[in-house]
Length: 355
Image (tube, helix red, strand yellow):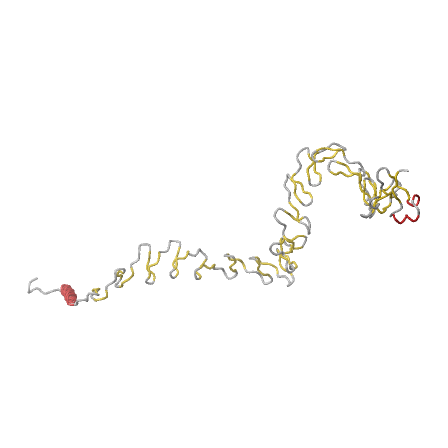
């Protein structure tokens, strides 16, 4: 363009824009180099602001905490990132609510229509005005003394009873069981109840139940006698100490290997016989009851008589006679002595040489 050439309007506009741009650049450069920041600050967008710390980084002019790869910044704190199936609620990662539910606190709440209510995490229809809901089911209303059981109004169970399969049953405390509508103590291990009073043992297949106890069954060749297993003996015999012995006759009982006669209470067995027991004051001598005499007496016949004094012996008739030395005999002193000598000899007899 020559000096004589006139500038067009477009050229003038372009030139003005270029001059303004150059002016801004020059001013910015001058300001940048003319404005110095202190050591704890740095220039950001033409301003001196505090430097970020080592665990921070500047984002959009702000210093924020640096988080690890598996973390994210939440309200100025580094928190573990939530998974794809989770969402953040405040500072916590919670499982995302499924369709039809909304967030309610830290849980999810089902959203039901106006004619429905939520029950057991499901939307169910509301009950009618003459119905009540029990266990999620609309049931008929019953009178105060009755309750709805499977659509039927049944009389309520008494105190201490509960309904089981529609029937009111007694509820027993711990350690007891119901038996015939009574609460009874549980039977010990190994026993079961046969009536309201007794607990009996439960026997195995190889046991017999005898007298409320379990006993092993008898081996082959043996038979049960009471609670014992004994030999199986032929007719007319019985097992005794491992042997088969003849059974005792009527009126006799067995004592060991021997059959003994059975006596009445006022009799006793003597040599296999039943003999009347001795009365008081008598003692048994063989099969005879003999009178018991005192120490200064002896039995003569069936009587207790005084013993002979020293120097006298008793004859076969039971009389006491003086004992004479050899060659002498006993005589009545009155028969051989004059009367004036009788008192010189004690007793009734004296020994006299053979006459």
